[in-house]
Image 1: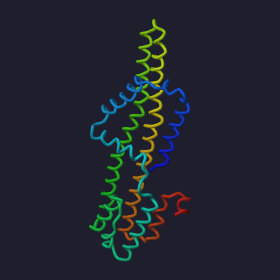
Image 2: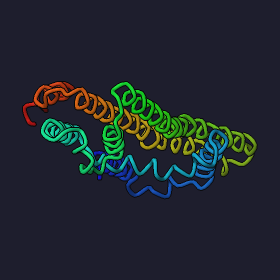
Image 3: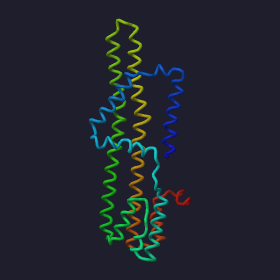
Image 4: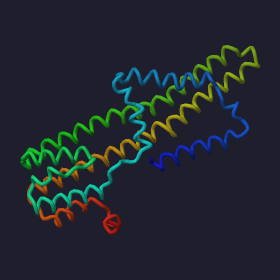
Length: 248
């Protein structure tokens, strides 16, 4: 579980609860909610196909779950594999199993006799396609972040029209103005506390996963080329910060 995401959302909810303490009813508007959330859903369906939209829950789940593999573990596995190959040859990796699918695919290619050139080509394409798949999810949440405030403005305009249409009845001016302002409020909250931060975290996680895949590719290439395990480890750990290297 990604504790940072949970802390951020809880903190946002606590701030909203504090600001609306004792006045929750005042900040509740079904009209504003329908315009903002309904409009947000409608615009998302227009922008993306059903196949991509069905993945929304899975994409959102990545925001709340930390990656299973970290760079330290991956480097350790690659160094271990390098030592095995140095002792028993590349075919000894046939018995080596890992939960990382990208690494396992790379191992299978090595065991099947792939050349460094072929391995580079195949794994580079996998990383490229991975980036493309991530881009769809990131774009979806970025578009939601753009649409939410816009839908809030639509709600505000609707409220203003209702207000101006009932100027002769002072009792209706207040509720109409409240609906208008709450729509903008809902749109700003959804965009700045949920969709945009989620899109940014997805970008961060995508870059991290691509980096892990790149390290795996470089490590496997080093193994195929017979690079000394100690030299390979030093080369791969260059991606880490000085503090992380000392910790490792």
